[in-house]
Amino acid sequence: MKISPREAERVIDRPDRSVRAFLIYGPDTGLVRERAARLAKTLTGDPDDPFNVSRLSEDDLKSDPAALADAMAAMSLTGGERLVRVRVSGDSAPLGAYLAELDDGGAPAEARLIIEAGDLKKTAKLRKTAEAAKTCAAIACYSDETRDLIAIAEAMLGEEGLQLEPDARAALAPYLEGDRALARGEIEKLILYKGLKVQRRDGDDTVTRADITAISAAGAEAAMDQILDAALGGAPADADRAYQRALGSGQSPVGVLRALQRRLDQFDQVHAAGGDPQAMMRSGAPRFGPPAEAFKKGLRAWRGRRLDQARQRAFQAERAVKRTGAPAEAIVGDLLARLALAAAPASNRRD
Image (cartoon, rainbow, N blue to C red; front, side, top):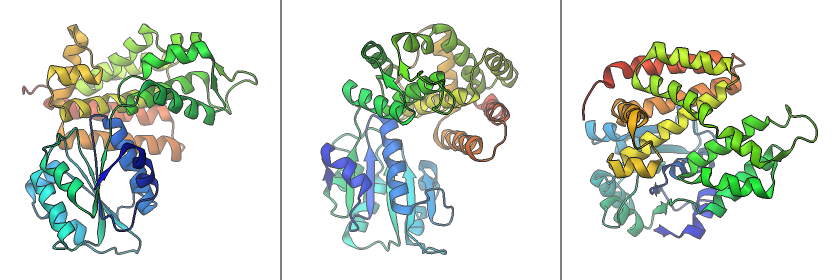
């Protein structure tokens, strides 16, 4: 069934029991990921439970056509709702065929299914099948309008006791354009700059235009790019030197981690949109000169399963920062080194 934009949030937060599968797709890959993560938590409570949650990639479906049916038919060993999550970059005829079989009752299903996809045309088999099936909800994710992104910013800032002054609201809007993941990254950068609620001085709870200018300074962006370009382009020594310089200048390791996650999201967005110059432009990637070449090098190194693994490593690092008590500087530094070593051979390949 096709879910209207105004019904999307309700379906994510209160999914109907009769719906066995969910297709979440669209050009805003950040919103696709966010909604899929929220839905997974709604359905299972713990989306990271290895016993009740199975994850399949596009490569998994190609190498083992029966992998999806087997995962969907498997029963829970520990009780609770089982969930299968699949991520594809575009149309998938096998997935479309499975959804049709599931809707007809021909596919045994002990689990529920979440499919994350890129931008699908109306003629895409996966989208057409999902919209026609009674047991599947098709949810499109399109870029938020500026007023919606400002509302998200105010909500996130409000959680940390911060508020935007009118001039700051106008100054912030251009930095939120793009997909929701990139917008959230900019908001989180602003929060880190102002300091968390427990870190700030009393009365320092207003975000000003000067604050927006400070966090968007070209020098800070250049320093961050040096870290990311080296780590994702396969230059471990350069990545470590750039990272240590950034820490010495006061950069937060969590800020570096957030920037890394946004860059990986950009890679995913470009690949999902076809990987051409137009896709790069829409993602907000640099268009000319050395920055563009560095971005392309990283884009060649990280795709498909490799990109999924990099995103998972970044997620695990974030969890470690929050839960283990280990120094964030060491956790993020280790992640950058591992990614740089992994990218070294891949970055030399040509498309």
